[in-house]
Image (tube, rainbow, N blue to C red; front, side):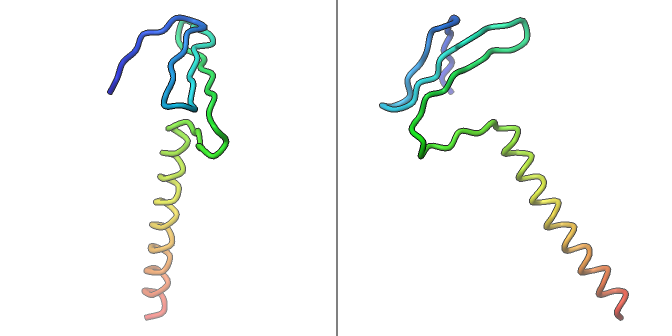
Amino acid sequence: MLVITRKASESILIGDGIEIKVSEIGTDRVKLCISAPKEIPIMRKELLETGDLNREASALADRESVNRLKSILK
């Protein structure tokens, strides 16, 4: 992992097409501006993790429902 210190309005470049700029620094958060080509998806990690957890829970619930139904029909 690369750790870079930046001040407000400073930025970093990733490759040729991605720029991440520090827009604002507050007491408990930093506001970032990300410029990237439209074909590169940008998503907050916690949203991706929540989606994964929801899919896993949904799959587990489906298996549990099938198993309950099987036991009822026996």
